[in-house]
Length: 166
Ligand code: FES
Image (cartoon, protein in one colour):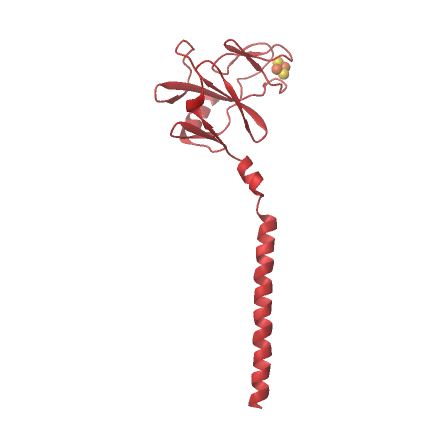
């Protein structure tokens, strides 16, 4: 009797152990399926080192498949509530898609010009000519020292976004 009980207990424990291991393995497998791929996670944020920019020469970065214009303003360029101040420097950050119909404007001297219908934006990303109905849009960003991280809504972003609503 006691021998039989022990055998039954052993079988019961064995089954429970196999079921537990199988269940844990299934959970690990499911988590791997549910979790975003590393490429998707990395695609959510783009870090831009602002120290590499030359004043008056905007660079285009890619964030979530969109072009992002980052301009380090020269001392002569207009002051704007949209300026991001880092130390002595001022920067303009904008999604590089025309707010008319989405073409990518090109920088010519001191203006972003849209070849599609002639829209223009000044160095503060404000529309100054043609059909664009509003300034270039502001992507979410946070400041980390002398870098910005596109995709995070930091206090500097919120402050500038607030001025654009007014
Ligand atoms: S898409 Fe830029 S002006 Fe029309």
